[in-house]
Image (cartoon, rainbow, N blue to C red; front, side, top):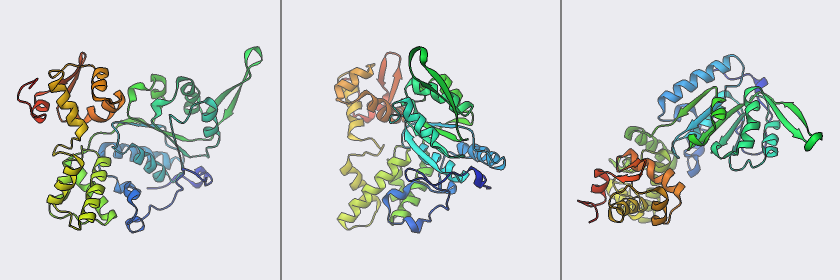
Length: 348
């Protein structure tokens, strides 16, 4: 893979930037719990179709000695959106500046970020749906034509100045793509990619790699036992692996299937990967609401949870495994969800 020419590389900066350098080897990161994020393209497991499309786009841009077009990644939390953004920058040999939609509160904040970008740099905005509409409108010309329009003054004396920006690539990530306005979505000319949940085999491959980095020896089918409780999500898989490692260390035992079951039982994680909060949601739907339908606000109040927590964390996985369904009238418990909640009939 050729790299974008050095003329597109900006100077090194202090914070939140990854210079173009060889990916660290596993031995360099052996004892770092935070080093589980893939640092090289070949280390990234899953999302095969997205990876193939991105490689074509990045290769073509590299051969033209031009930064790649703007990209948007969306999907449930923990599937690798941030990791892909960093890998895009590494593949281009470009530095990356990281920020969040919630942090950019004023037009001046965005202007400061954009004007300090170097040529060819990657700007990653996590949770980009949290940008307010005023800031979005300033971002349109910056993404499309490479200019930043700034209004100086107020009233009749107000005037607009136009600043030319260096060529850059914006990579956005969001868990709620529907909250992005249509004009903003249309500016991601490089592509809009949805990250899917991972298969059992992919999660097991991720766990084996993580275990090697952490120095954890998984005996027998221990990796399978963790993987089937990982909610098809790499972040959750790595979390369960770390907690299993801690349990094995304290108990002074090897990481066997029996130990994995003990450790995850202590965490309250069942064989389907459901947490106590997930099971409480299912039981509440069965007992108090007769299986539904029930509105999100009512459900959140009954659980003493935030609506966003239910909608973004609990619901996607419960819907994926067919335990609940979302209808125009509200949330409904399915026959499978009823069975898992330990109820033969509703209201019992």
